[in-house]
Image 1: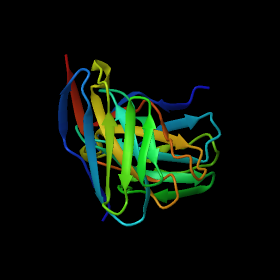
Image 2: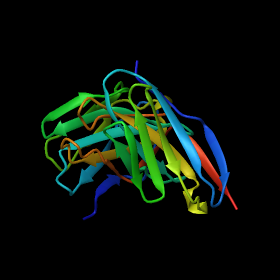
Image 3: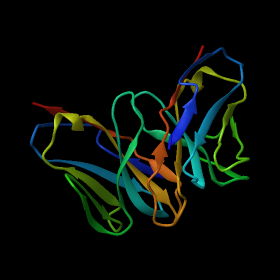
Amino acid sequence: GQSLEQPSEVTAVEGAIVQINCTYQTSGFYGLSWYQQHDGGAPTFLSYNALDGLEETGRFSSFLSRSDSYGYLLLQELQMKDSASYFCAGSLGNTDKLIFGTGTRLQVFP
Amino acid sequence: NAGVTQTPKFQVLKTGQSMTLQCAQDMNHEYMSWYRQDPGMGLRLIHYSVGAGITDQGEVPNGYNVSRSTTEDFPLRLLSAAPSQTSVYFCASSPGLAGSYEQYFGPGTRLTVT
């Protein structure tokens, strides 16, 4: 089957760095995306890795290793507004069809 | 641009009733999809479409129908509502071009089946 596993919850303090991991068991995942979702809101796109390695977008970076079936999202200089749920999502084949991970709830404390 | 719009925002149904959740996008995106999200869980793909006239099943298609007669609209039909379909439903769209994988989500429809 196709599944993406994430830790259920991560906590950190403002200004810190946090890493959210995503491991997957599937064949045919073409790339890995990350989405942020605040309580009661819709998911919003953060980043996408089509190739192995690190992609950096401002305070957020995302990493993919296909050989290890593993990726992570790195959030730096944490702010209170970063408290949200974060989802990794695998792209099936070279398409826009996404399978979402289980989600990680990040709580940032002052 | 309004982006992706969904109606209604909230809906309560009785078991056995049918209804259609509406989704529209004004970005001329080829790819559209429907997800459901149960409390504290991730999103599960119900159905998707790669263009007008083309639809396919996702992970959890049972109990739902879709059609795509235009690029803009992608309605989701619940055939006979069941309490297990109580969930938040999100519609999403993306250009569908190779290398553009950002999906744009609508605000969601919160459905309760009693």
